[in-house]
Each structure stands twice: as C-alpha cells, then as structure tokens.
Image 1 (cartoon, protein in one colour):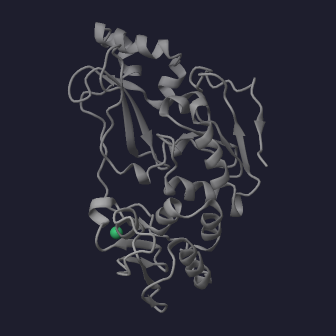
Image 2 (image 1 turned 180 degrees about the horizontal axis):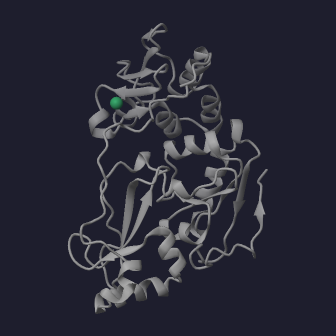
Amino acid sequence: MVEHEIDYSAVVDILEDILGEHRLHNDYKGQISFDCPVCSHDIKGLDEGDGKGNLEINYKRGVFKCWVCAETHDTYGSLYKLLKKYGNAKQLKKYLLLKPEDDGEQPKRTFIQVRLPKEFVPFKDASLGLKMTPHYKQAFNYLQKRNITDLMIQMYNIGFCYTGHYEHRIIIPSYDSENRLNYFIARSYLNNTKMKYKNPEVDKESLIWNEHLINWDEPVYIVEGAFDSIFLPNSIPMLGKFMTQNLFNKLYDNAKKIVIVLDPDAWEDAFRLYHKLNCGKLMGKLWIVKLDGDKDIADLKGDLSGYEIKQLD
Ligand SMILES: [Zn+2]
C-alpha cells in the first residue's frame, strides 16, 4: 500500500459540507462524529440533527458507522459509500482525489470458496455424444437462441445443470486473474420460470468477472450482464447497473481506456457512471456508447459498428 501525504483537513471540509458541523473530533486518530443523516434527520424528520453525534467516521481508515442505526439501516461501511449517498458529484470527486488508497472498501478476507455445482455438465463434454439427452438439447437450444457459439462455450466454459439446486439452468463461470473460480451465474433455460437467475451467495462486492480474460492495455468495456460480456471481448460486467468499489479501484489503477455500454434503458446510469469514473487518473480515458431501442449487447451479438463511441462534455 502506498503511503502518501493526504490532506485530511480537506477531507474534513468535505464531510462538514455534507453533514454539517461536527460534534467530536480527534484529528490524531482521524476520528470525527456528526449527527447521523439517517436516524437523526430522515427518521426523526429533523432539519438540524439531534445533536447526539452518533455517526462516527474515521477518515484515516475511510470508514463510518452510526452507533444507533448501523444494523437496521445499513449505516456503516466505507466513507466512499457514505459520500456517494449523501454528497454531490463534486464532493465525491474531490474526495476520490484525496482519499487514502485503502479506504475500507477492500474486500473482506473471509473467503467463501465458490465451487461449481456438483451437477454441472460442461457443454464441451456433453457434446462428445456422451450426454446427448433431451436435457442437453433443451439447454443447448437456449444457447443457440441467444446466439452463443461453440467458441464462446469453450472460451467461457459454459455448462448447465439439469438436476440439483441449479436444476434447468445454464451455468456461466467466472475466474479471477489467476484462473480460480470466483463466481458463476445460473440462468434458467426454461420458458416459464419465476426466477430467471439463481446465483451463489458470495460477496459480489469483491469479485471481478473473468478477470483472467482482461487485457488492461486494450480498451475495457463495461457492460451490465454476464451474457453481454460473452459477446464483447475485453468486457467486464457489473452484474447489475451499479459498479462496486472494487471494480472502480481496479479500473482506476489499470485501465488505459474505458468504454461504457449499458442497456438502452440505463442511459441515465451509464451517464452517471461515466462522470463518476471520469476523474483523477482516468480523466479523458472514458468513452460511452448509447444503444437505441431495446437492443442490448447480446442482441447485437457484440457488434457495435453501427454505433458512435463518443466522449461526453
Ligand atoms: Zn443513525
């Protein structure tokens, strides 16, 4: 970890901008308290705060916690999380330029080892003719319908389960930079299903999807879903519309050029993400694509040739 001079008084200024006057402050420890924006404002409906200073922040460690509502209202975590929620874009940007490298959003070191379901059948094995069952055909039809080719199946080690906890689901595994499994998604291949996805319960916060396939010297595409990423080489799915701090840090440290391509219904999110990323070292390295209509990347088979890749003002 790089220990560099951090202007903590500037961090305190940002905090006071957002949370009002502080209550207690120990600048040696970097500990400061405020009235909690959740339980003394939102819940009690006060304009002023209750004067109790229950929200405690350690800006040297980049963490915060409310002593009253942390458990019930998720009022704890990284300082970044707090600023993202209560600060404006300018304050957040300022903080990101100042913040310590280790701002508390580091993945927790409690590894839950992800394993592929024991019922997992990789398509590449199944297609040897050993398992040409109706189950196989049904699962394989789904991939064909989504234009997934044999090459993609090989490259991503796609498979399926026809029994067990992940019964009737396509499995797409994700491997970290050292080729260790770190996640998988399980998408139903049945037409009528209540639950389209049923993914393992692990800390999604810390994982980068298929990082072993990423070449950081090339433009990195940011997409929403795992299926999108299959069609666009060198892309990382956020597995949702919001980016984790861990992925943000990874991009910040490694990316030379970033292209954001979210689904057409998420232009606002894409726009916000663009501006969130376009700061500090990443300034000017951001590009964005606006997809029309209701076509996502998978529908376009990853072909963005008809679209303008542009930078925003
Ligand atoms: Zn609180």
